[in-house]
Image 1: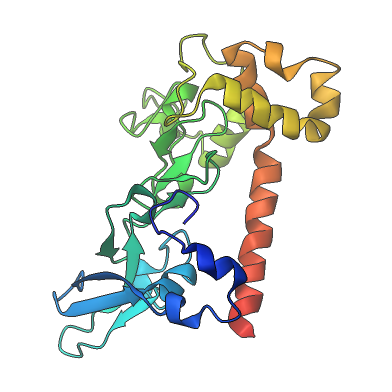
Image 2: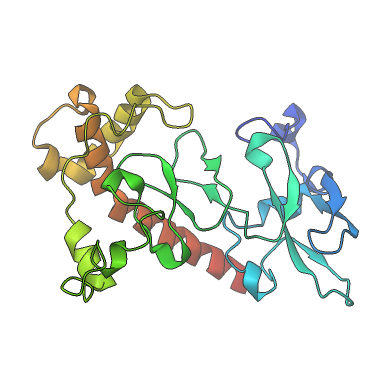
Amino acid sequence: MLNGNVPIPAELLEADDCSSWLSQVLLKGGCNCCGKPLQCTIRQALRQGIVGGDYDDGGGRAPVQCENKEYQCGGNYISGICTGVMHFNSGKGHNHCAQCPNFGVCIGDVRNEHCFRCGDHFFAGSWGRFPCPCRGKGPDAMDYLDGGDGSEDDSELDYDDFLDETSSPPLPEAACWSGHLHGVTAESMKDELVLQADKLSSELAGKDPRSLSLPELATYIDKLQPHFEQAREEDEELEEDEELE
């Protein structure tokens, strides 16, 4: 809606009852499992989460449920709303990054994550096992969890040790981020940092966020990650409370 892909009639601003508009069909399509015709209303779409993480449990939180008992299909999420190319999805490919500016962006696989260091999206794997390539290693470096070169001396390095090593990463190389963030400029990211400056008052120490270089900007955005995660947890708790009600 905020991106304009779901038009909102002007008369709704003064309407006492929006139920008829909320009941409008937003998408008609086939079940992601059996192909049975399904439809999703605006109301149903508004009630779905931004990540379909329950796809392997039957998709019980999905807004549309297929009742085909033969295939036991389960839930269907409506994905791609922000791009205007909507489709039903089991949930595995339903992942909307709410950390990006301008209302976020769809990033597909639920195993993809937003990197608070370089601002891009990357494949983190199950349980976030892989770091963003901007940290120097990615999912192609399959031996990074056993120490790097697989030798006997460093094969005992476990995941906790790896996290300790990367908990305070150095400044990224100047060329690791071009300032392009899915249509967002570096200047808009600096504006965001200005809004969040109170959370980093000690780190910024009087620096003007608008004068930061790209590596510095990426590093300060990285430091905001705990605040973003806390906000996300609060949103999830609020959703759970609403479901209980």
